Length: 207
Image (cartoon, rainbow, N blue to C red):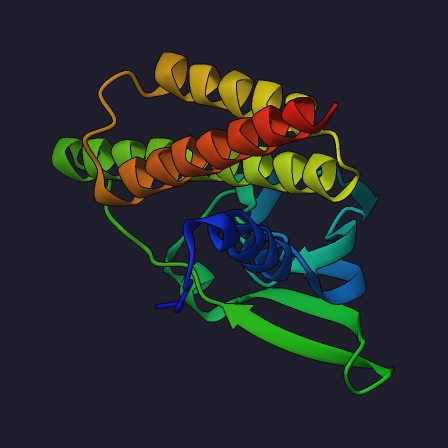
């Protein structure tokens, strides 16, 4: 996206406007329900706090979803005497939320089907690497969420501290993050941290 600034004095105002729009909630009062079958056993949801309603239903609530941020939660399941029939038993994800533009609640339902794969060394290694990547992205997105919440409250220093904390966590989990998606999110965090530092500098200069 390109902007006509006119003067270098206007750069900060344009950045603040763009960052605020990116971090503005698109929807609020979000509830996500994950329903699964008896062939799998729920173990953990990484990235967000959750509540297990019963043996086949997990629920999580979010205050808001922001237009400029991606969100990723990583579900961990164990298998319960699985066979090829699991391909026909979907995991059902239902999302209900308040749309501030329509001024009403809406609902979306998604069905996710599992893929049955034979246990072979090469496949297991590929799956393990993919799971590690997904977990890494989930942690990074959680960091962006915490950063955006602090930014909205004007806590710029806390936002920068949380960015550094989550980046260090990623380096411990995924030391050689030579992956396009992970590298892109790490770079995005660096950009946010740099701009937040500039905001702090400008505020201190006004005092």
